[in-house]
Length: 353
Image (cartoon, one colour):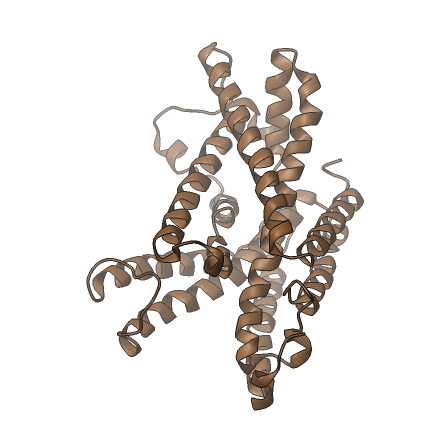
């Protein structure tokens, strides 16, 4: 099923539209379901996968991952382009944590608790991603590894060793619930941030409208339609793995552009508005702490932006791919500029319904 393009598109559409309709019911309902899905569908399968992999290694079973301390293992650059593109997949797994800022006002004692929650989420996410990836690499041979369903393949092999294969459908269902919970979280976060900017007069009234639950319904529906169009890429590109990497690269490029502006804006605002009271301030005196954090982030993000222009698969031409990514980036950057240029003073006075 992992290689059935029609099946993948159908699942994407069903999950995304379900998450959209759920978020239209308000933050309380979507937040509760997202928390349950993430707990049961991310933490439980991750702990099970890592735990079984540790038992697998402790019993002296064959390890598929070459763990010798050599330069080739620490920096596997036999295919530099492919390694760098796969690096983007790892980066994409840890981006987006700033989306939670759209819910900061709903946090008790936000000045103290929100930074703690963000740091904890970053650490937990990094550890789970690292250990989960290593667990898969330990069990599944590299030539059999699938980027889309690698974790499920590893669990299938591990559960089969101890005759626990009957648990696989349960674990697969939990993983699916976890993915759905992540989608639900991502659906409304960016929209709320864009809606807040729109209320300042940057978006037309039709995009500022909210339903009875205070959710910007029109923006959510437009986002779902655009996401449905993007999902159709799976029907065009022959390889599911190449499609996965293609969409990941496109997302990382767009995210990188946003992060570059975010880091640059943080440094600029430190000098143009130094006395503005903010819920959180990067430690390190007046400027060096911010320059260190934002500078490292800017350089890393810039590298990811350039890597994103490398084609993810052997069957994809370098020039057409780079031009397609560049066109996508320019269009996405042009849309807010056009809206900003066309903004009207009366838009800022619009009241939500």
